[in-house]
Amino acid sequence: MAEQENEKPQHQAVVTNSSLAFFEKYINNPSPTGFEWKGQELWLEYIKPYIDEYFVDNYGTAVGVINPQAEYKVVIEAHADEISWFVNYITSDGLIYVIRNGGSDHQIAPSKRVNIHTDNGVVKAVFGWPAIHTRSGGEKEEAPTLKNIFLDCGCTSKEEVEKLGIHVGCVITYEDEFTVLNDRYYVGRALDNRAGGFMIAEVARLLKENNKQLPFGLYIVNAVQEEIGLRGAEMIAHRIKPNVAIVTDVTHDTQTPMINKIVQGDLACGRGPVVSYAPAVQNNLNRLLIESAQKANIPFQRQASSRSTGTDTDAFAYSNDGVPSALISLPLRYMHTTVEMIHKEDVDNVIRLIYETLLNLEAGQDFRYIK
Ligand SMILES: [Zn+2]
Image (cartoon, rainbow, N blue to C red; front, side, top):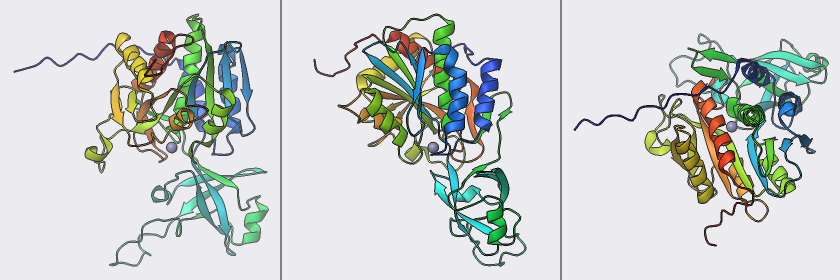
């Protein structure tokens, strides 16, 4: 029996040329975990016209607020930090060994160009790697690990390196910048999860431009330090004490080689936002997300997670006395590489889904299972 495949709903674009220009600038600015403040300043500057007030905390989490007087508080959240490296050891002949700051990938490091952030500004360096000719032939090839990858900044002694302003503890980011592929994918480093910061800011823009009055306080949270264990979210959840939290982060597209769908599920860029099933996700809030997607004709996909979601959702859910929390993920290819890819339509649709869910949320809404 031939069944008519459901027609894909007509796509509604949300991102404008000027918001895209902000996104590009925001992505190209480095925002390493623990050192996010320049990115946070850019983000606040963008979001200010769309909010009533804002505040920041001691570690740099930035929060835009709409209706600050309201008692019932709803958070929409993303994380602002970018995985990076730390200078860990400078050799007497001027090479630099590194440790991770977040889940940086040793396998992709060789031959990448980097920026070392010093008090005197950026110093350029490269991850060197022995030539194919000089690696001992015939044997099993040595793979890149933290023990053998190193930076070369063009110096031949430790003193020279130090003269450039480099010291143990300087952070290192990649040079790679924002590009667009086939007018379909945004490509860049740390779209995980600065795409999220961009999308929640776009929600604020839509609320303002469409003149929507929310019956609750909206806290648009761009949290720091997610990549090292959801730390920024933990801090700010305690401070805001929200009634509801809707978190956005990225998840793995599983359509490219060497990914096992039996383990990772079947998720694809271009098929829409991903809603999650996990103990930390509050089911009644999740239902509201799904109904909002269905009502507004927004395509979506489903993902299940054992235990935690591994996102700031967990930090909000298990904060205070337990905050009803849910996760809207953006499918992404090649996570934690410098060529992370996300689909333009998914970006629009995550923004729309958060926006529509907010419009369906009531002040004082009680999400408890048993009343
Ligand atoms: Zn990440």
